[in-house]
Length: 53
Length: 256
Image (cartoon, rainbow over all chains, first blue to last red; front, side):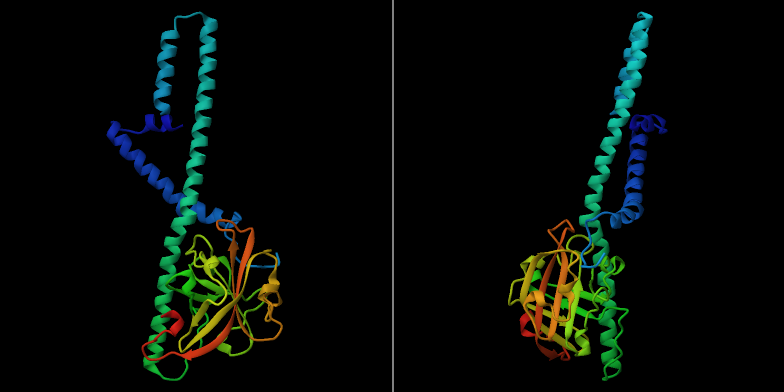
C-alpha cells in the first residue's frame, strides 16, 4: 500500500519524500477537522451530565 | 518499507525465474501471500496510528480549540459588562445567550470558567461550564430564589474545565461571579462516584448531600474516573454570602 504510493509519486527521492509529507499532513488535517469530530460523540468518553437516557 | 520488501521479492523471483515450473508457481503464490500479508500489516499500522492520533485529538487538540472559543466568549461577556457599566448604572437585562457569569474554584486552580446555558455537547465543547435546563432545570443564583444551581463541564478534553474536581474538599469555596454580584458558596458534600442516571443530585434540595430544607445550593457534575464516562462525580456547595461587585471588580477574600 505505502510502497505502491511511493512508487507512483513523481520525481526523485527528495520530491517523493516531500510529497509524502504533504500527503501525511493532509490526512491528519482531514482526520482532526472532519473525522474525529464526527466520531467523538459516538464514543463513550465524554458524557459529563447526568440524565435519564 | 513496503517498497524495499517488494523489490526484494522481485529480485528473488528474478533469480528464481529459470527454476522448475512448480517452484515458480509456488513463488507466485508466495508472492501473493506476501503482498496480502504486507498490505494487511500496513492497514494495522495505519489503524494504530489513527487511534494514536485520536488520543492526541481528544486530550490535546480539543483543549486548544475549546480554550480559544471559551476565551473569545469570555472576552465578549466581560466587554458587555464593562460597556453596561459605563453606559447605565441600572441593572441591564440578563443576556442568557452569552455566558451568564464566571465560576471560580481556587481548589481546581486559577482561572475562571465561563458559565453558559445548557449542557449539550455544543455548549460544553466550547470549554465552558453549562447550567442544566434538562432533566432538572437549574435555579439561577441571579434570580435570588431558593434552588439548586447545577452545572456540568468536561473532565478531559474540550477545555477540561472540571479536570481537577477531585481536588475540591469540604469547606472549599466556590465563587460565582456575575456582572454585579459575587456569590460565595462553600462546599459541604462530595459524591465521588454515582450512576450517570442519578438525576436526583440535581434536585432543588439534593437529599443525597444530606440537606432537607430548601436553600441556595450549587452542584457541579462531571464524569469520573478520568478519561472515561462510566460514573459521575458530584460536588455540592451552599451559598454563604453575596458581595456587591465594586468598581475595580475586587474579588472576595476567598479568591485572594
